[in-house]
Every structure is written in C-alpha cells, then in structure tokens.
Length: 572
Image 1: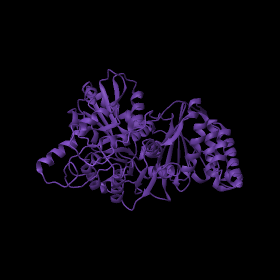
Image 2: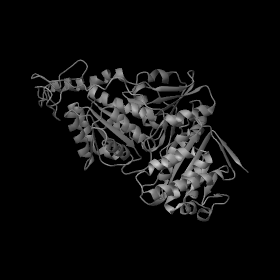
Image 3: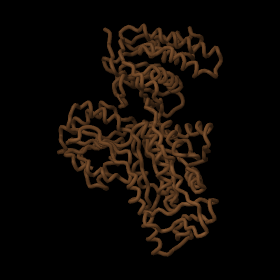
Image 4: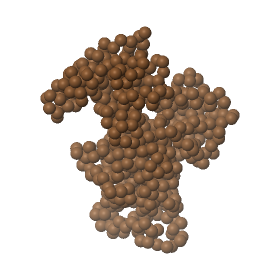
C-alpha cells in the first residue's frame, strides 16, 4: 500500500559514530534548501568518537515548521542497533529504508547503499548515495544538488568529484523509483534565498556584527562549535581567537582584553563557567564589560556532555560571590541568536556588566533555514571616553555608570582593583564608601530597564491558560499550542531573562492558569518569576533526560494542564 506524505516529512538517519551521519545531513541540507523546502535538523549523539548509536532527525516542510517532532515518517538505519534504540518512535506508518541484508527489519524497503556506491567508484561514496536517495524521493532539484557536490568537493581530485556526482545521480534514480512512497511537498521559492545555519553559526555571526574582535575559550561541548566558527571567521576578519589552557585563564584573558579596549567573547558550558566564577566576581568589582556565551548541557559534574538541558539558569543568576548587576539573554530562534548576541556587546559596554547568552545543545547543534538577518543601521557604540589627568574610573554617578577609559587613550590613569576601592581605583577600607560603591553598582539595574526586551506573546490575546517558556523551547511550544485548536491558550516566551522585564507581570496577571515549561528538573525560570513578580505557576511541564521537548509530548502535557484549569497542579 502506497503512503502519501504531504506538507511535512520527518526523516531520521541512525548509525554509529563514524558512519557519516553528519556528512549525509550536510549534503542533504543544501539539497533541500536549494530546492525550496524548509529545513530543520537535530542531532542526538553519544559521547564517543566511534560506535554507540546516534541519530539525526531531519524535518522537511512546505511551510516553516521548526518544532521538534517525535514521530518518524522515514527511518534510514545504518546499523542494526538503530531499530531497538528508536523503537518507541517507530509506528505502523514509519517507512524503513536501508540495506535489508545488513539490517534485517521486516517489511523494510531494500536500498543497497554500499553496492550503489561501489558501482559509482568507491564504497566511501555511500553517504552521497543516501543523500541522493532522499533527494530523489523528494523530487528535489537534481541540478542544484549536483552544483553543490561540485562546490563541496572542489578541492578534491577529479576522480572523487566525478565519483560523488555519479553516486548522487544513482541515488536520485533509486529514490525516484522507490515503491510505496508518494511525497508531495510544495516548494517555496523564497526559501532558496534563506540562510542555512546552525545555532553556533548564528551566535558567531551575531558576535561578529557586535564588533567582537577577541575570542577565548577552552573546548567544552556543546559550546565548542561557537569557538570553531569564530576561528573560521578570524581568517577573514580582524579578530584574535585563543584556545586557552583552562577556564580560569579564559575568563581572566577576556577581562584583560576588555580592559585594553577590545570586545571579547567567552564561550563555555556549565562546568567551564563553574571554574570561571571567581573571574565573574572580579568582573563585577572592576565593572568591566564581558560577554559570555554558555551552551547548557545536563549536569552536575560531567553529566551528559553531548545532550541538552536548561539547567544553568540558577548558575548564571548567581555566578560570582557578592552582589553586582548582570544581564541574561536566552534566544529562541536563529534570528534571536544573532540579534541578542549582537546586542550583548553593546549592552556590556554601555552598562559595564557581564552579559550572559544562554543557549543549549539543542540550539547550537540544530540547523535550519532562516531569512537573512537584519543589520542595525547604526554602528554599536564603543562607550569609551578619552581620559584626562583628573580621570576617575569609578566616579560616583546618579545612574551608577562611571565613564569608562582604557589605557593609552588620553592622559589619565585607568586603575582597577579586585579589592573595594575609591573613585580613582585605589584600595579603600572606608566602610561608608564601601556602601556607596555597592549602591552605585546596583543602580545600573534601573538604568538597564531602558533596554529590556519584553516577553513575546504568541496566540490568543484573551487567553485563560498561559504557557511560560524561555530560550530554545519557543518553536516547539508554539507549534504544540497551535495544535490544541483552542482559542484560550497562549504562549509567553522570554528571551530577556534578567533583569526580568517589568511588562511580564501584566501578562501573567491576566491568566487564570499559568503553566511553566522548562528543560530542567526544578523549574528554575518559574522560581525566578515567582521571586520577582509574586506570580506562581500552577503547573509545570519539565523534561531533563537530555533530549529536547517534542511537539507531541508538549501537546499531551498541555492537554492535562488545560483540563485541570490550574486547580490541582504542583505549584512552584
């Protein structure tokens, strides 16, 4: 019986580390986007170089569909362990395609990838064959795919280029000829002009647009992708990228760079930021700008290094001993990732505070198409003054923001010290002055209010149930709520986390039923909201097994919360 798939298709590639899932996905992403289909990919992999059981879910749509699906329409297993690992997601409607002799799954459609690759010149071309098979099933633009293969392998030998082109052609032919599958996705011409980016690339481009000229980090998944992207950009732009010996060195080198007038980015994960805590506190005392990108993964300790969680909000809220202001941002889309990172550099320089950009493994490692980012017409301000001989780095001001100078720009001395100090930067134990200095630093929180981005309301304006989420869960939650088919449920998404936007209170007060959805075990955002606004979430939908929420499970959880109406939920 032939199965017809319209509008939206979910393909899952599954295999061992080292079998080339990323190669297939990389080729397929370009084929799909250049053909005019919307694209989203999400990789789920074990923390090992070889072996294990990894998978990449690819969503291909006629319309923009960026939520994470649980279902599998087509499964392409490259090893036997893929079937039992994904069994809970395989349904009677799932079509399994692969090498029958190797996989042995009943009812699967046999496509001999290795044989086709060998006939194309070399068994290593199997990944190109697999990408071609999917392109053939989609009736994607074969010439656009061939153009990409020529470009992708341009630096390889003529033999490798020709072999991959032949493998692609044979894969297309095999995909077009598959019985039992009828895929009817409509193409969208505008998608061809979209950007195709991972979250790591969006963050890196945002940093570049924000004037970043110094990057330092210690490799730690899942933040390493941003470090790698910035290293690649440094080949074309005036930028220094340093892999430092440890995280303590990272934070101090970044502060030194800002002190000298650079615009520095730190990229790390939870364990790395834990080691940077003393440096974060130093940042607060010397009132230095700082931008930290933190890609979250499950903890504590090493936890699950290659999985996803929103478990570090409390860490970022309280990193560093003592009281001092900070800004916390958490993008939910690629466009927000770019824009918030760009803004982070100006916010850090303007208010002389650390700015944290919270992402997670799902955000940085997923890839999708997005319209070209809008660039700000006005260039980011340096917020640096030329100093005179009477310059005072920590002058007491009504706003709490002292004029910032850098060494060598003017005749004044720029003194900073980790001890409490007077306005000129000299160590002081004047206790009255200590109180005034703390108050001065904390005054910045009120000033920051002018730049705070309010939460985004998606859905019915006259809602009764309001689903509160933050960061990378946005698209999945919005799609899940739309699928409920109710006009009394809306979504409130926070991309600016702290200081908590004042307008949030008005949205929260209008709801009869507040539902907090977070990828952690303790509803950290819900507790922040209660602390700052007094509003309590009657229900929580929490997930912390290392995988992102799927649209289906969010929808199932919301049905229960909406039916209960806020009467019997666990309050936080």
